[in-house]
Amino acid sequence: MSALKNPTPSPVQQPPQRVAPVTPVEPPSQGLPWKGLLVLAVIGAGAFSAYQFYYKPAQEAAAQKAAAIVYRTAKVTAGSFERTIRVSGTTGARLFANITAPRLRGFESRSQMELLKLVKNGSWVKQGDVLAEIDPGYLVDHVDDIKATIGQSELDVSKRVAEQGVETENLAQTLRVAKASVDKARLDNQAAEVRTEVERELLKLSYDESQAKYKQSELDVPQRKLIHEAELKILGFTKERHIRHRDRHVNDIKAYTIIAPMEGMVVMSNTFRGGGESQQVQQGDQLNPGQPLAKIVNPSSMQVEGNINQAESTELRIGQRATVGLDAFPEIRMKGKVYSQGALATGGRSQSYYIRNIPVKLSIEGLDPRIIPDLSAWADVVVEEQPKATLVPVNAVHRDNGKTFVFVKQGPQWAKREVALGSANNTHYVVRSGVNEGDELRLQ
Image (cartoon, rainbow, N blue to C red):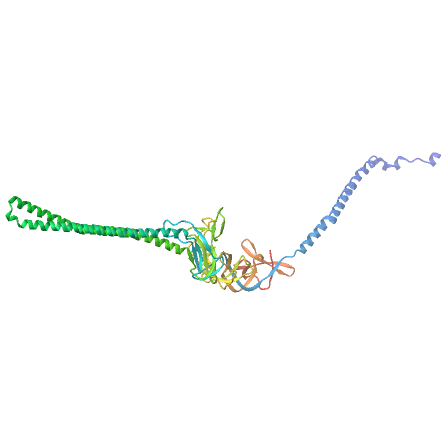
């Protein structure tokens, strides 16, 4: 009965336990997705943290930096446009006179001359003033020797004239003796009738002989006269040669005093001394014949002497205006104009043979006492001018695929706009279309 009161669970009431062997295996398989989600969560949290603490601040900083960029700008202007060509060179004078050491006429003059006196560089001289003097001591002594030689030549002529007088008198005496012999033979021949045949023949022969000698003596007179004249001419030529020799040296002595041919400022030339050093000519220097000594310039006729490339020479014209400046005095700005242009191209010593330049001279208007010769100078020659033009800066123009454009400010943005360009100089372009006066452009 107790068995009936407390019945034990029957196996039929536990059917789920039949799958118990399968149930203990399922919990491990259900734990794997949670670990993967945990890893993903950790990775996501790291990525979020990296974004929040690194990428996002970097992006914000880049955005702030881009927003903080300030472009340099310039506005489109309207005004006159000039295109120039730069000419570099040195200052000089159109009116000048070169002063050189004298070229000596005497063939045996010394090749070097000592400079005894010289005016100061930069001094003002008038026409006829003494610029320099060269030591003439050697030539003065040589001229004295030549004068003595001339005196000796004159004595030689006088001596030969006296000798010729004696010879002429001797010849005249011989002629008189021959004439007397002829007269005597003629008188003797008149008495031939009383003489024998042999004596008459001898008298005739004596007469013929005397007459032949007389005729020969007569012929000797003009020949001797010609000889005497020739001798005197030779002596005269020798005397004349010495006189001309003396006169050449006298002219050389006069040339040793160098006179100013015009009024102006003296600019000394350079010479090479020992060691190849180039310095200005000064008192005590040894000069060679024809050596440049100085130059006298008229400061009122100053000019710029320079060169331009042959490719630019076709744009230059006589009379074009220019602005002239000096490297030594940057504050000076003077007006000038093209005065002359060379017809033939030349090449500089330091340049290639194929690089050719055209010499150009530009006159300087006005007078400034600071402008002296041989200063480095420049000139901007105006070769094109437009009184009314729309101008944009050169560094505001961009190029892409053969097109030109600018960035025009429109509110907070920059609008890209294509433009048509005209002439250009070093700073501006002439714009034909695309922008208007007052537009603000972004510079490069």
